[in-house]
Image (cartoon, rainbow, N blue to C red; front, side, top):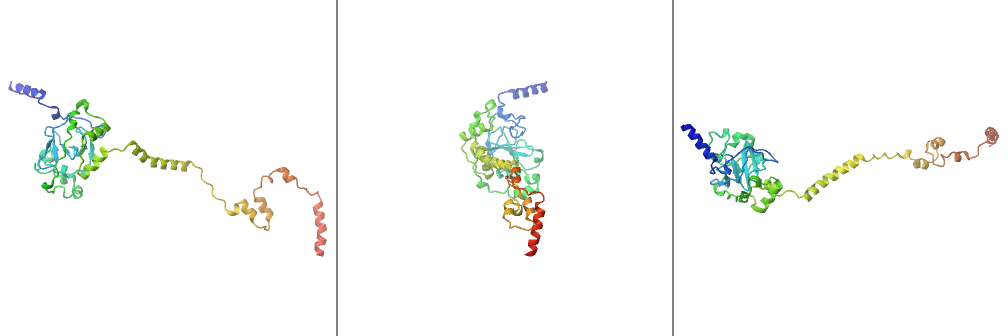
Length: 297
């Protein structure tokens, strides 16, 4: 009976209104980018991590943070970021994760992975041993900083509280529009600045058209070059009819004239046949008459 009573009490607690919506984390898909395995149905409670410019969500069983104007989630060995509390999310490479995200103490990871076991709760995760020597060399000094120089935490985007459930904007363009209208904070972290600008300042259609124009022009030029007829080689000077006619008479000039392309008049039969033809037998007689004369000379 005691066991049944405890079960009924547990069911009653789960069904009671005290279990608010932001405590439930379920499987979800962060379209159109990636699925991170969580779904936050309502704007979560965000509490500052003492001494850090970072918020965490104490009522979410997830590694959920807010830093410098962006939400950050560590899930399945990947860091994700988004402008809105329920995505869509995009992957952030370990090499560019902001240092203050890396410095969050282990105790604020409310859904820590198994390899966090045994690590000091007041210290940051041992990212160097997890991501390897190359990463540690690239991010050298990430865990050494003056706590007195920590910047103040960014303001929370509380305007998103009114967008939950079916009212949550699904289109990225609509999210960016609302974010720009209601959240005037400018990030300080260089990594976040680049990410923030990529998401909050998308290219306008005119900018996209200007970007595509050079590529389209180059493509059209290449197509025209491929489709255009190839220019014929310039004829050499001795093959040109004009050059042939300009040459001085040579021995064997009759052969050169025959190899020269005939003009339209030369190609007409009536022109060739209009010249007077010698009568048969006249040329031998003329040669006979010329022989004595040439000998006398």
